[in-house]
Every structure is written in structure tokens, then in C-alpha cells.
Length: 223
Image 1 (tube, rainbow, N blue to C red):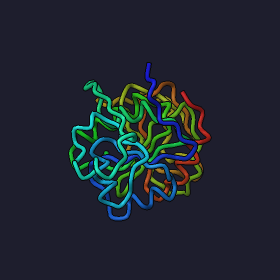
Image 2 (spheres, rainbow, N blue to C red):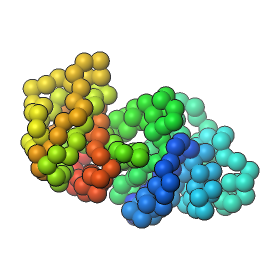
Image 3 (tube, rainbow, N blue to C red):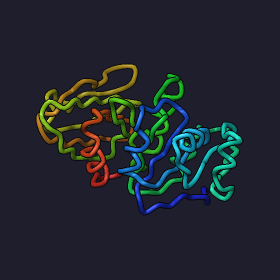
């Protein structure tokens, strides 16, 4: 049982140590003002002039400068090595939603580990942001208020089937799996409603659709 939980009534910006576009952290904090850092992400936050509310991880990448800037009580040390720092955070944050930055790139293995963590914890309303995209684990059912022509990519991280309205190419009756059929570069014809038979699907939208994705997740039918 996990007892050290970060509970926030405000949305959380969760920052990692990976690549961040200029201004990305400040923009995320406008939407999700509670700042939590995953291990070395605390260095990124402090360098950008922000002191995290909490720092979670095995803390092996936190610099001396960061330790001096962040009150000691804000560090949550999780020693186990079975999960990544991102997953440690997902398991311990309860918030309306989470915006994750610095978890997709520059290392491909770190990016894949983040996608894996998303689908392992589909009950967490977490969106991972890149310079161009917003990705999240599909809930049981979600409605997205998208404009016609919006890219809707579906990438299965497990064998999963679903149904949808509002997509240019129907998905009902298709068996998705990571070593078989995938669903990248579909398109919305307007508002989209999707339902899935089990967890395991990643939904990837353009950053321009971030607000629609957030609202969709907040209203979604969870697992």
C-alpha cells in the first residue's frame, strides 16, 4: 500500500529531466499550477525559477544547487528500483489532472517507459506533452470536442479493441496490438466519441487540441 500521496485540489504540472521547449513549463503552469518534479526534473524547475511543491523519486539526479533551493520537507524519497521516477510520481499524485513535461525525449527508452507507465495506470488523468503533441492513456470512454481535420492517432500498447463515432476511418471491428494493426494518423470529422474494451490504448493529439483533451479526460468514464 502506498501511504505517501501528494493530494492536490489543483491540476498538477509534473516535470521530468528530459527535453522542454522554451516557455513550455510556464505555459503548463498556467493550466496546472501545482508543480511536482520527478527526481532530476527538480533541477529543470529550479533552473527555470520555480520551486516544486514536491520532488518525488529515488533522488539520485537531484543536484546540490536544487537541494539548497527546495525545502527538505518537500522531497519524497522512493528507494525501490522496480519503477521509473515518472511511474513513482503517477502512483503518488491525486489531482484533477496531470500535465507531464520532460518525459518524451531525447532518449527513446525513456519515452517508451513513459508510454508504458501511462497505460499501466490508466486511472490517472495524465497527459504527456511534447512540442507538437499531447498523449494520454485512453479511458473506458471519452468524448473529445475536436474540429474537423484534427489528427487523432491511436497507438495500442496491448491487444485492444474499441469503437468510435466522428473518426474519418472507423475502428469498430479492428483488433489493435503493438505488433499488428495500429491506428496512427486518423482524423476527426468533428466531435469524437471513443470507447475501448480494455486499457492499453494511447491517444495522441496535436498540442492545439490540448484543452479539448483535458476537458475530455475530466468528463471521461474511467477504468
